[in-house]
Length: 157
Image (cartoon, rainbow, N blue to C red; front, side, top):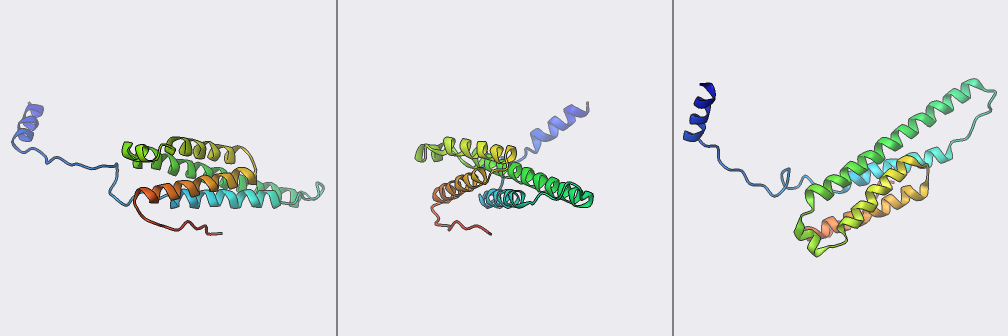
């Protein structure tokens, strides 16, 4: 009974059709969030590589080292994962078939960037971290090219 009343109400008062070309309002997408996350992963990688091992007999120093090491690793992995999420959102939600026609390199670029995010998580490697930043820069350039805008690429550090 109730469902037929609701159906009849909807027939008499149909909701207006909504149309959008993306999942969110225009202007939501920007590769800057991926860059910021990747930069944090680079920073943590540098900090990890710079950590000095304490004297094994200094218990307090070993505990402090392990705490710092664990925090840096956690942040590095979280930020690399965040960069990957941001990259995948751009790849799957922003870029449309007409972008791919104009830029056939899109799929390979994003695939490599996502794989590099995983490498940054798995390794403590400045090479992987810098490679990720290189992919992010390429994504930045490609993204703004699709919007016919010249937005300079910069890093915070």
